[in-house]
Length: 255
Image (cartoon, rainbow, N blue to C red; front, side, top):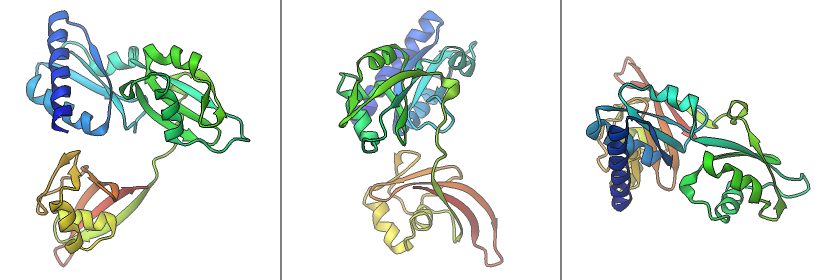
């Protein structure tokens, strides 16, 4: 993990130097959520003179591209005007079994495509919407013929026509003694605080994709919790307090 972060930082440092030298915008390949979080923190510290924006093609995209640009350019506008990614629509006959995310990703990577060149893969019945870097979209469209045991047809899909499925979450409304990490983990995953503590101290928990091992760590509203072996959740909101002094909280656990 540390080596991967150093590689990402070196890539961002090179990008920042190029943007300062040329006065032009430049984008990364697709970053996973942990890379997005680390890149955001790194650039806020090391490149406050530059501006950046993130997009994966739709509002709740998990894998996203980061666009870095000089301070006089609007990164959101640059991304909107010339997105560095494209969408493909994959379809297959109904008589074949339902393809899964890993079937489609494996077929795409089997063409010699790198994982960082592929964004989210939104799988539905008999079709999938796939985000890829713009420069490799024609190659995939011309060469991807099958996935698993099913023949696959690939066609360009305008980004404006993306129809991502709604994120499946379970809303949890509860009260907490305090917004400590052990309390939040326990509430999000239906555990007692006693069982949550060794999960945290055992280095299985990340808050906003940063490892946290202190059960007393104060979790801010909006934070995303990733717990190895249990899944992911988000602290949506902290409200007022009850008559007994407990904090009202709303969480979402991703299904």
